[in-house]
Image 1 (cartoon, helix red, strand yellow):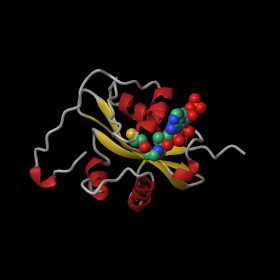
Image 2: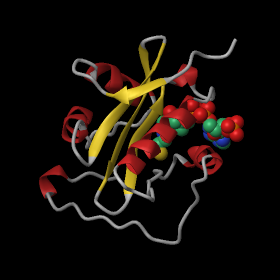
Image 3: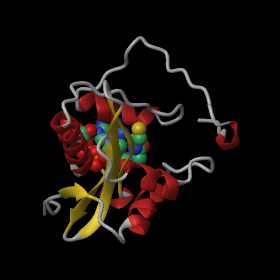
Length: 148
Ligand SMILES: CC(C)(COP(=O)(O)OP(=O)(O)OC[C@H]1O[C@@H](n2cnc3c(N)ncnc32)[C@H](O)[C@@H]1OP(=O)(O)O)[C@@H](O)C(=O)NCCC(=O)NCCS
């Protein structure tokens, strides 16, 4: 039987724990990135939001999307592990792309962590490819410094 359709919308009040549970189960959280803080910082802004995917009324996927006025990006792209490889990830990323396009953004840059190369095939199937740029970073608030 095909999986239930995925409905995607911005996160609503009270859904934070469900979203963070998905991100945690997907291995997307890191000790130096407080997901509660990241979620609160991004949600419901003019240039960023957190989108949830619901199947049969239950949150089973989530993504953080945003732009800096030039390029768009996505973070915390996650589908509940037992429901992966059923097309939800494709639908989730398409919704994030649509969100960006609605803001006038025409290009996405996203980061795949070292060690997570297995998802490159997923992004390739959605039309994402490696570029020749190098990703640089600087922690301008040393108090929040992490490793990735
Ligand atoms: C990455 C992730 C979001 C993909 O979601 P998903 O629901 O499993 O993906 P889909 O079922 O929508 O797959 C879409 C396409 O990608 C392909 N695909 C999915 N995972 C793949 C993989 N690991 N390698 C190669 N192709 C893959 C699917 O076969 C499908 O291709 P098709 O439409 O041509 O058949 C999901 O695996 C996940 O949450 N992973 C853990 C968190 C993570 O690493 N997120 C990315 C951070 S950069």
